[in-house]
Length: 303
Image (cartoon, rainbow, N blue to C red; front, side, top):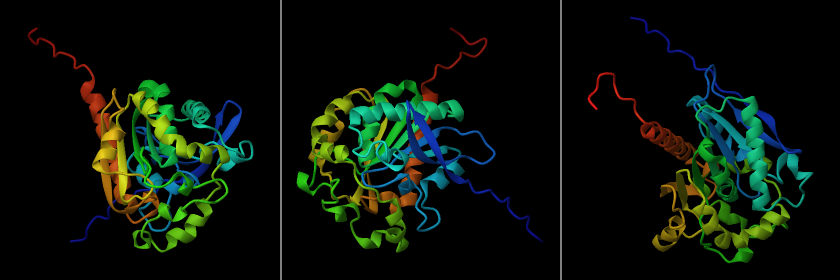
């Protein structure tokens, strides 16, 4: 008996877009659900020395967060942080975190005036992008559903001089870990994603352990940290993890580990697994919101 062919699901289109933030233009990549309103907007923030395309790996099918997120019903917006992409010409030295945070908030406010944001914003951030996510989080209020941060701790596993600098110095090999963790094409395609680290950003790098506690204490939305199995920039032993989670006094926080991955998780074989976990955490955050809403008493129920 002939079988009925399954419905063909149209692939989401990934396209460049721009965001306007008080006179500054940021570049970004955008993917939207096909023929459906978004359940939420997943905002992706790349790490130092990369671009928004970090979250759109083309090394193998299935590794792109933008494609996966749109297929699961979310709008995915991967932003070139201030000092990268279109804003690099205006900000050749970059911006400090305290100035980048309001730029990001203004850019996302602009986005929300032009696109449906569904239930709100969810930040997924890698490495230095996680610093920006934490610095910006408190001003989003109830619009922020949660945050998923990878490749960022608060206790360095290296000496400060080993951190990537604006002069191209630093131990860049620690971004990767073992080569077997990445598809062969990842390094060739990754050349198009590499961008100079802005001078101000590089200068703030060693200061992060001092900046972190105050920023974490202001966060109100749920947070998940992920450390790759071969993370080499940050300590993730038991003592370091206790120190990482302690400052979060107003929101739940968890720490998880990603097997078979190096620091650049979203460019490796583990990208799809990690991105599915990101979307799973987003679903948990949405469920927690729904469960927390006051339930109406059924008509005729006893008081």
